[in-house]
Length: 107
Length: 120
Image 1 (cartoon, rainbow over the protein chains, first blue to last red):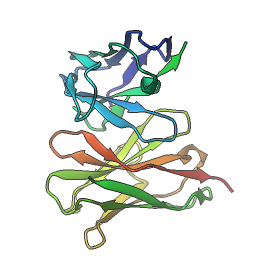
Image 2: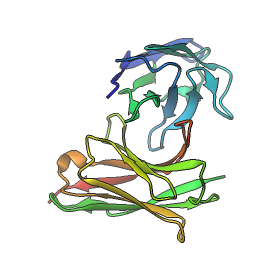
Image 3: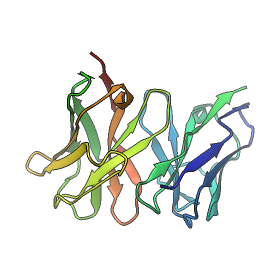
Image 4: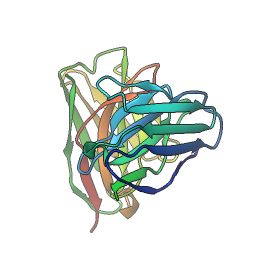
C-alpha cells in the first residue's frame, strides 16, 4: 500500500502566522491527494482535493500544492479556528491511505 | 444536506464480532454516484480506511482486514453496516461512516463517529 508520511508531527504557531505542512507519498499518486482537518471530538472535514482544489466553503487562506510524491498544505494567516490536526490522504490507489497527521497548536 | 449517524455496540469482548450501522438522512444510499464507507481511528492516532459498498452490493475491503470485515447495505432502511469478526484490543477505535464520491475518491460527508472498545 502507499505509505503517506506527514511532517512535522506538531507545529506551534501564533494566530496570523503562515504555516506549511508537508506530506510525502511512498510512490507517485499524481495529484490524487486530499487534505482533511480534524478538530477534537469531530470527524475529519474535507479541505482540499486534487492536491489543490478547495472544497466547498473552505476559506481562501487554505491552499494546496504538489504532485507525484510531494505535497504541501499552506495556511496563509492562521485563525483561531484553524488549530486542529491535518491529515493528507491519497485516493489514487486502493487501499486509500492517510498520513499520521500534523497537529497545529497555539504557540 | 446529507447526514450520517453511526449506531451499535460501544463495548465488545475479545474474539467476538463488532457490529455497527450507519443511517443516512438527507440523501439516498440508492445512488450510483457514491460509495458508502467505513473508516476507523484509534484514539489519538491516524485513520484507516476499512472498505466501502455500492448500493448494488459490490464491496471493496482493505486487504489488511479483508478476512474479518463485511460491509452490507439495506436500501429499504437507507442504512449500511459493518461487521468485524474476531476482534482484539487493537480494534479499539472511533469508527466513522462516510460517503465517498464514486470516481473521485473523496470523502465528503462523515458521521460523528462512535467509539468501540474491545475489552473483557
